[in-house]
Amino acid sequence: MTQHYVYTKQELLEALRSSEEQLRTVLAPLPQRDYETGRYENGWNGHQILAHIASIEWTYPRLIETARQAAASHAPQESPAPAPSAQGGIDAYNQRQVDKRAHEAVAGLLAEFHTNRAATIQAVEATDEALLLRPIRSAGGVTGPLSNVLHAVAVSHVLGHAADIVGPGQTGPVT
Image (cartoon, rainbow, N blue to C red):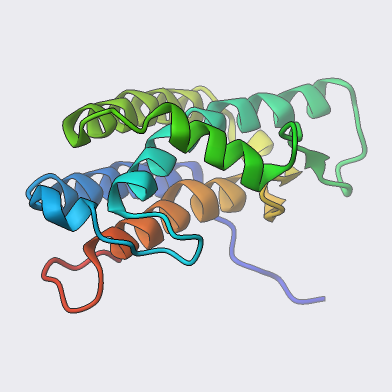
């Protein structure tokens, strides 16, 4: 059996803070025309991708609560606690959230992301290391210890989408 690296609480918190700063540093100064360009395989433009980033951030404290409830119910540790499923599937959910934010300005979307990221950080701070080791499955199907799933969806996923917005050949590293 291969051991996989598991992020500690401190590493996860640092990554959450750092990725927010990276996102804001790279996206805030982009001109509006960069947000209007199609960037993503489903046809989303930069504005829509940012709306997606802002809208999904609120789900991460909920994912922590799902893991907490599974632990409290004494569900077997070895089977991942499933995240609540979205009505109509994850793609339909994501589209509904993006559509709700169609007329929101970039500054408003960045502010929503910031508010929701603060709630994510607060939820992680209130979570003990044992819970961060508990297996979970995100609504998007990412499975593993809670800390790794949170890193995958709240750090890697978000930074990947920030890179989608910036687009190829643009300045500003998003890693």
